Amino acid sequence: MEINAPYEINKKGHLVFDGCDVVGLANEYGTPLYVVSESEIRKRCKRIKECFMHKYTDTQALYASKAMSNVAIYRIISDEGLGIDVVSGGELYTAIKAGFPAEKIYFHGNNKTQDEIKLGLDNNIGCFVIDNDYEIDLIQKTAFESGKKVKALLRIAPGVSVNTHEYVCTGQIDSKFGFSIKDNTALIAVKKVLESHNINFAGIHCHLGSQIYSREAYYEAVMIMISLLGQIKQEYGIEAEELNVGGGFAVFDYERDKYVDIADFIETIMDTVEEQCSIRKIKRPRVLIEPGRWIVGESGITIYTVGAVKEIKGIRKYVSIDGGMTDNPRYALYNALYKGIAANKAAEKCTEVVTIAGKCCESGDILIKDLNTPALEPGDILAVLGTGAYNYSMSSNYNRLTKPAMLMTNKGEVRVIMRREDYEDLLRYEQI
Ligand code: LLP
Image (cartoon, rainbow, N blue to C red; front, side, top):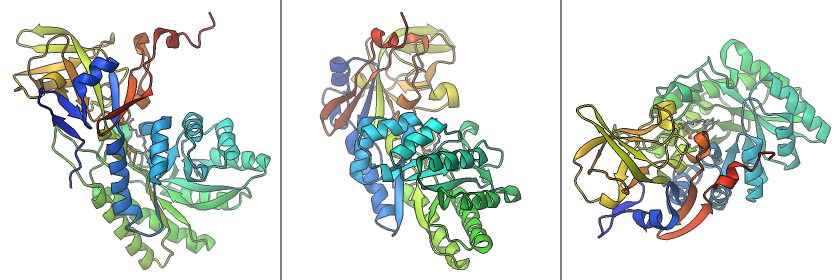
């Protein structure tokens, strides 16, 4: 089943997103502008509950908040009953400020500092996901100093490669993340944790990568992870409480018309877990997943105003917009493909193929190569779809561009959840 984000075209021929006229939003709030749909995010959380948390007992979904981290989203996720994964003191701090229930926070990352660990301990977060030997020692030491015992999962590199961009593959052996499944490294790490008095070993975690379309990859990973749980039981007489298989569930690829329903991934994961636990005679652990992009990716758009248009006859037409790699670095980093719609000409026929360029002083500052569109002129409004994940969270002030405001819509209602940066904001850390 395909879940498409809430787009329509109104009588004026304008693009409408989640009940809001996109041209109207641009006029009222200025551009560039991030817009995120609360109703879409909630719909997706509900879908995850329906096909995972309510369908199978003892399961929990965590929102991987690196995809988009701010107070508003943490509040929605909390309200929907999902947990979160955080990867830094900053994400953790934001979640705590949003009032997120600490026991549902999982702290990831491959190089947590002692201050970050302490922040987690002081706030009694639910679980640390330990990435390496250094972290076992540091978490043990810090928990001891705080007089606490913390729940922990060990992150495993299961040696499963996925067919996605090299920069977002994480489950292979040659990875900076996790204890390798090779050479008993993972098993030895479990022993070390079991001997750490201030750490309570709760289970294992893996994350294969991002924007994955292959159910087989999850099948393979679960096979390896359950086999490891079997070894842990055999060697140390312990049955793990939790198995976290990470995130990575792909969103709709408009260009290649590719999509796999999240329910299909979950079915593969759960069937394999049940079957393998039964074969290996181990207690079925609580199963966790960590979708980030799937929850917020298609729930967001970015709105720009067209400025300079330059045609190099017979070669290319460049249409520059008032944002770029500073608000969306994903084309520059991963050659990510986006769909763009001329919001004020949404009902018009596409007559040209253009390249949408950002305003940074970089040739690589492109948002969309070869966009089919009605002719674009200065002042037109362009909406880039599916920008909810890893856009705002990876944005920068390169060239001293100010970051856009962010709106949250809900079926025609609008609120500002992040104000637009101004030039004073750019100077806020300067010791003038
Ligand atoms: N769990 C862990 C441990 C992760 O590292 C990640 C993403 C996720 C879950 C969520 O993955 P998702 O469901 O969102 O695919 N900046 C890149 C993506 C980096 C993903 C990093 N880890 C991009 O823009 O494509």
